[in-house]
Length: 175
Image (cartoon, rainbow, N blue to C red; front, side):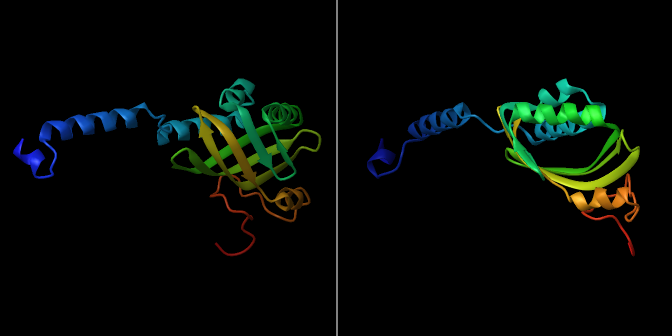
């Protein structure tokens, strides 16, 4: 009682306030843990290698925004791209270098290698994607690539550096 009279808060009241405040914090929706996001991103990326549509669609939020050079679309459009890929390409490999997670956002750096069925030409591109997770699924995926790389590889003007650390441009001289 003496503590309350001097302007302080009694220890019992302080404990109740802290308990109530921590209850409010735990009632809020916390972002997924970093390892869960890394696993989700890996499953999504590797689905392009395995061509298992359910692996891709199972990682995608119903309100997905999927963007890459040349297109910005929704989940249905992303599934159309996935199906087109399955139809026109083979032997795709995704070499993931790193997946960085910050809260519900992520960045993935990887190398994407594939062979076009109609020409039997293989291309390899260093790629970066950034995105966001909501409700445990990828709701935003923005992929950044340089289309010149695969065009020049098809023409034989740039080397294939498959399996190497991804860079925006293959090594042509030096390290």
